[in-house]
Amino acid sequence: MTEVRVVTFDCAQTLVHVDWNPPRLAVDSAEAIGMPVDRLEAASQYHRLLTAGWDDFRRANLSRDSAVTDAHWRQLTEDWVTALGLGREWVEPLVTEAEERLFGPGSEVFRVYDDVGPTLDALRERGYRLGVVSNWDLSLHRVLAMFGLTEYFDTVTASLEEGVEKPDREIFDLTLRRLRAEPAETLHVGDNPVDDLQGARAAGLKALLIDRNQPQTGRLVLADLRDLLERLPGVA
Ligand SMILES: [Mg+2]
Image 1: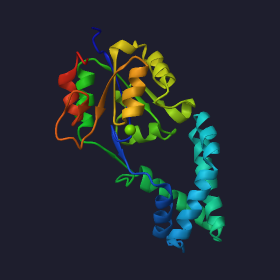
Image 2 (image 1 turned 90 degrees about the vertical axis):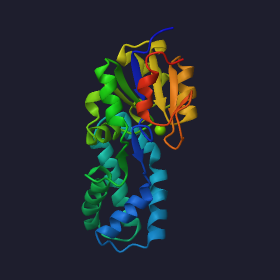
Image 3 (image 1 turned 180 degrees about the vertical axis):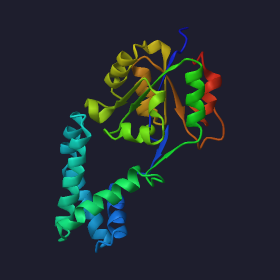
Image 4 (image 1 turned 120 degrees about the vertical axis):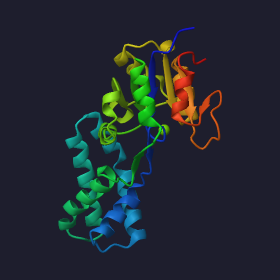
């Protein structure tokens, strides 16, 4: 059996807890800066604009340029303020407030799990090559950097930058090419049975699920990321 030398991770609910509700974030930000909004009406307008602009957002991500995606969010914010019958003077404070809530210290959207740092330290010490394969937008790089995780990974693949997402095997294939790794020597860990377990296996990788609500680690499911360490090498 080929020994595992490479470990790839999903990000959302695997490395980083994510509680991203864009309309709620927009409305909370608006209230925090004193914008006069009706919560329900404002949330519903935001949701409508977000959905209508999603294809544009996907295209913006393919540019791999955060100035392009930032411009998308700014435009959406401006369209929202206009739709609510308010003046453009609200746009900049709103963008600043939302950015702080997303990416500032004490982010209310992203939180790194406690078992991540110790696990990645131990894997690096033991010489494993590490990667991230995530269904995420361009901001994945920023979020990993926020938590000091960037340096652990030899490559980081965000689906929206590539135009392909898990469980499609192409996203695993391209990540392994960047890692110069063979599927058989690679273990993928994630929380989604379809995207992470089935998707990785279909691409020829070994795979484990993480579910921190489990009482204990089992054959295919880790209850704590640190339990990965005693499974390596030699994951079936
Ligand atoms: Mg996930």
